[in-house]
Length: 331
Image (cartoon, helix red, strand yellow):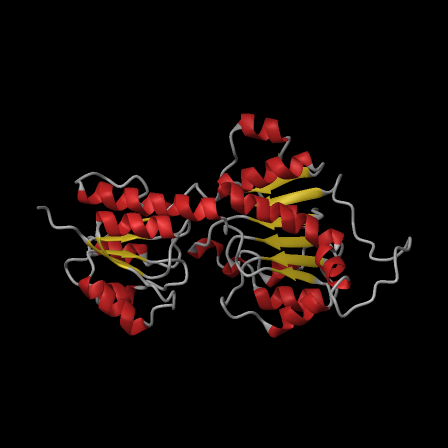
């Protein structure tokens, strides 16, 4: 009987995915769902044929160099792969895969929710009806927000998620603008009535709402630097459902405190899981809406991610190229 590959999973996955993993492979699950320590990750790469990490695991060069010769595949349960030193893995002959595409609609939904929530002050309004508060009733000038229809939305990163956000935003009457490394196909631009900006600086200075949807790469670290954030109009809002490191969070906080930016909606943070106390205070004042990295958190999405992990592992050990390999050209 063919020996099953030894698979180590770093966090709890949906029951259906874990059950199938146990059926197909010699799988060690993380039943307690406690983040693995560095020592546990080292032990895992020394013994596993396949490591299944998540975005919270730092699979850096030092860890990869600790791997035993049996580790042949890192099948990440994630859309992004910035938590993995892919170059070091490939140099060691270790294939890296991810789970692209399945989170597009879920993340776009959450992005649109934040685009609505921040200007319309939805979280502030919900807090008014907390059990320990009294609501005096409706008045014409209370809790006034901003209309989003007719406003300009600038999308930073017009990939799958950026396009999905644009489709939703267009339905809400927003004017679509975008900055991307490459211009999208003419038929996409035409369908979205989208305006392309080759200069990110020029786009930032003219938008009412900015949505960050680009991946985290060495080139996008602090892409929205303090200099660029200062280009935004005082009436503008910023939404980020991508990666916290794309924005200089300390600079953003200072600008929000100074009312140099009208507000922000953040689902990701630069130093996750730590959240800046200053951001928490701004949230209490209604200046920002903060979510705990839940943009892709749907049951359907997580199961689809798990199915992609299973397919990648099976394809690899059946002697085929996994469909979701991370290639050097993608770095």
